[in-house]
Structure formats: structure tokens, C-alpha cells
Length: 244
Image (cartoon, rainbow, N blue to C red; front, top):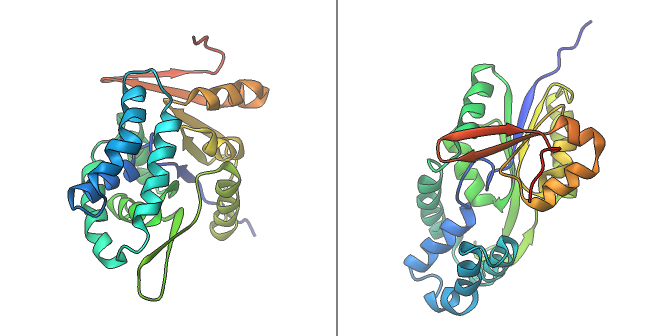
């Protein structure tokens, strides 16, 4: 008896599909609805954002500061009320996607491939994004809440490479996935395990740290396709292309 394995596509979201971070958009809306005091942004995050936007500072420093305040400020917030704001946030971000990634999602749907979102973003945001794109399943950072449905300020992260590898292996077993002929898409070192695992690997506008890791591995250097999308032009490169 021949067992036919399934072909699947594993996507990170922020920076891979979406041009804007789900968490950043949600943070902005929490300020708009006065759940988070605007002073949090002005005192703790704005300078780091400005430095990054002006290309003097690092994106990691900006996003780490924002994520820390985001988690602290969500503590005690009502889960049900948050669903309304989360949906609004995703409604905006879901159309702000890269052309390449949109086309790849359409390609996988047309070919009846399984599609999984594996993201470090909050689960309540990724859940809405998964609905928008009608994917097979998703995995994301879990934001825990108590019996009264208030956020506790605790999380089970899904942004690191080890965690993503673990859930990918679970999904591979659950859906009998053909690893060699399946696809992975990412943009940071948190996605490195997915890029290593699957036969077809793409990194969209990769962070320098990820590109450096790929270049250190001869197998990855040959396998991974680097996609650079600027304005309405898509460049497909290999890791041996020289960068500054």
C-alpha cells in the first residue's frame, strides 16, 4: 500500500507575509482606545522607533521595548473586549502584505497544499489572520488569562527557532507531511529551523542576522531563496550575493 504524503507551506507572518507587525498595529489601537496610556509610547518607545525609522537604531531594540510594555500593559485587560480591538487590527494589516507572499499563498491554495501560520505574534491576533486566509492551522505565542478571562501577563512564546521547530514536527506527524517537497517562509533567525527543515525555503527581506546564519551553512546557502521586494519589483537572490 502506497501512502501519499501531503505537501505543506509554513509561513511566519510579521515581515514575511505582512509588511506591518500585528503586535505593533494592535499596540497602536490599544492606545487609541485608551487601554494603554499614550505616555508609554512617548516615554519608552518613541525614541527607539525614531532611531530605527531614521536608520540610526536597530529594529530589534525598538520591537523588544514595545513588546515588553505591551505585555505589561495587557495584564488585567479583558479577553473578550480585546477580541474587538484585535479584529480591527488584523483587518488593517491583512491587506498590507508583500506581493510575493500573497502570490505564494494563492499558489499553495490553488495546488491544494496545506497551509500553516507559525508566528511569534499573539495568538489572538494570529487566529484572526488565520481566519482571513483560511489556513489549515496556526501556532503562535499564547497569551495566558485567568478564570475571569483577564490577561495574566504570562506567555508561552513562539518566536524562537526551537519552539517553531517543535510545533513543525508536531504538524508534520499529525498531517503526514512530505518534508522534502514542502515549503517554509521566514525573515528572522526565529525562522531558521523552518528554513532548514523543509526542501523549499524562502526568506523575504531577511534580517542581516538571518542572512549571516544562512551564509555560515553551505547547504542553506545553496537552498534558501532570498526574496527582496521593493516598491513593485521582486528580486530573487541567493545567499552568495554580496551585501554591505
